[in-house]
Length: 154
Image (cartoon, rainbow, N blue to C red):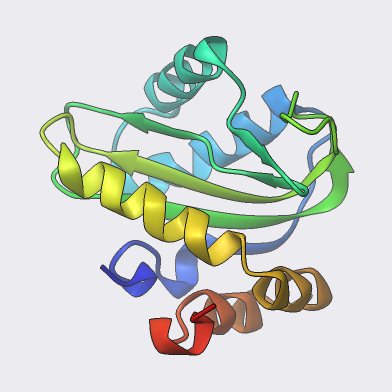
């Protein structure tokens, strides 16, 4: 699975303004609503339910909020580079500045897990993280995220 299957140029934000985890999730929910046609409040509620199970802040300033929504017909992703790092209750207590939102249909099963694994692998690559943090244009962020997987081999 390639990330270009999950995100488009219209689902990458270079400087998302958010002062808190809740505000970041609200902003991402609004964007996701426009992409998916699902109500923003339903997306936000799904993301909050998932966060109650444990933070999706995975460490190194990265968060991968995710959830399953019945009305979806495919996987959707949104990537945001935050203007200012925020507290996300991450495992390592570092503030988060890179967020990759993943939404999946309830029937996604293994595809959802494969997508999470793919995103996680990419965002563990120090070179990719450095490039993402060094880019302030959405088009550049999209290009970094969708480079062929071979270029991210560890």
